[in-house]
Image 1 (cartoon, protein in one colour):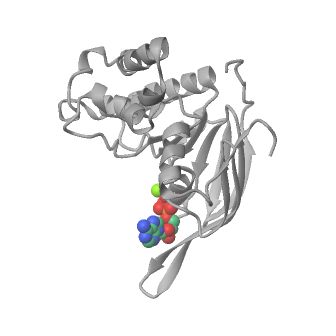
Image 2: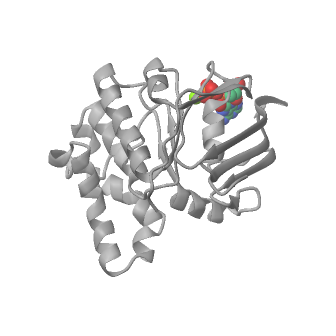
Image 3: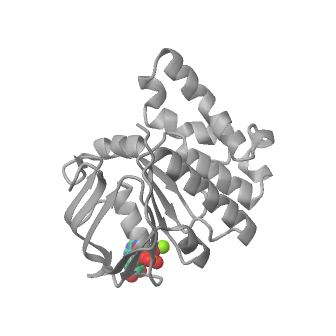
Length: 246
Ligand SMILES: Nc1ncnc2c1ncn2[C@@H]1O[C@H](COP(=O)(O)OP(=O)(O)O)[C@@H](O)[C@H]1O
Ligand SMILES: [Mg+2]
């Protein structure tokens, strides 16, 4: 692990109970991802993509192996610590958007800042910038007129943009996306992938996107293929440019 490595998985295995048996979902996965990488995670249905994202996103723990995330080891962390680590380092984009229907777009985007304690830790001008960030991000994503609307009044593409704003608002080290374009048309998918790549270039955040969509592969610079819960192929498809930001 060198100083650019933000994410490292060593010997990670995970199975789920099925009656009295267990179904293997991941088997001895090793993966190391450096600052600024834009990675597509591909593989047939059931190959373990979602399981892998959930483990990296601290939503679940592996049965075996270790996950290091921004210098912290997940295995020894309590549930509460993992929630904090998730809030500080991870942004999650789900296929089904998972917005909170009673909250407006802005409130949905603000949610991780509250949950991750970002507001709580900031003071003065930093706090001011943080409070303005959700509306600013939504505006950048072309949703200026929808800031105070609720998800039910928005199209699929607009909801996905809100979900993206929510995943980026805390400027996470790692953005995880599970089939982010699965419910979108081609035009919206291209717009959204362009936005993600721009953010990746600007902030050097790692993007790890589980996908079946060939369009997503055009944007990725590294493609990791899972087959039956193991890494079958790991290819660099384009060079990663690391921007000079802090
Ligand atoms: N919550 C769960 N309970 C039981 N089995 C599961 C669960 N989630 C996933 N699995 C099983 O684990 C394997 C990997 O699934 P998943 O990670 O969802 O793959 P993918 O996202 O690539 O389709 C599959 O065999 C699936 O049936
Ligand atoms: Mg899946």
